[in-house]
Length: 298
Image 1 (cartoon, rainbow, N blue to C red):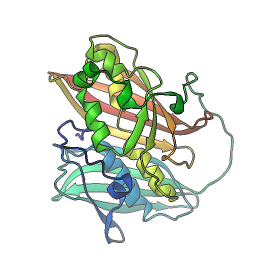
Image 2: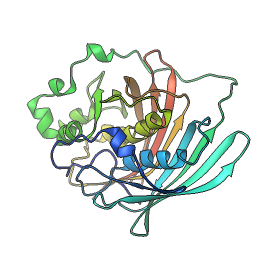
Image 3: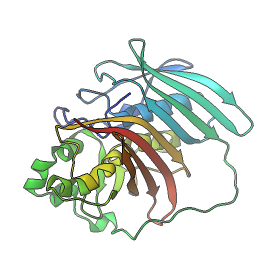
């Protein structure tokens, strides 16, 4: 069970490893590669395992079939000081779809498993759910650090850790509910953020898909806590990702601003279910996400 959702607060220092470095796996043979961590933490961040699994699987799939989904389950906490071995199982090579199973291991212990699917590009019927409401453009929003009061920064130290250790930019069109929770105020289980990679990622669509898979885990699970005035910093909270899914509806760049809407759809029995939608500036739905996590008060 469990990897760290969002980013572990025990990280040390501001290293901000480039996303391309995090996602650049060391190839061992045609179906085996090694991934590395570049941030000190007590556990591997869940989005890292998802993003690296996408890269490992894509290296065995036809280049003309973009990834359209990754369904991952976290089995055991990962140790950031140990390389992760990604073993790819070529499950299917069909006329339209290519399917790969990926098993991530450390010292022969499975920590994460994923099914990654690729599809030949084709047309068809189309529709989508719209953006929930117009959002202020990222250019009209202050830099995130400038929008935090000293009290906010002290109450939610994870935000400072995030800025120092993830090569991503983010701005919130509305107040981040976690800040209200830290003040003891309840909020609806919805939140939105403009996100992008901090550095140019080049033109390889696999890198952009894997980078979004990496970033998609940053805020998602916290949306389930907003009505309960509990933050991830609360010592009473036992928290871990159980699974994580990304559906890619379009090929897109994640080094440009994208609006990430998230909703904590359900909470009960010590678990929370969260869903997300990623849009471009024009309201085109680019990707959807889903995650169930352990959210247990001790």
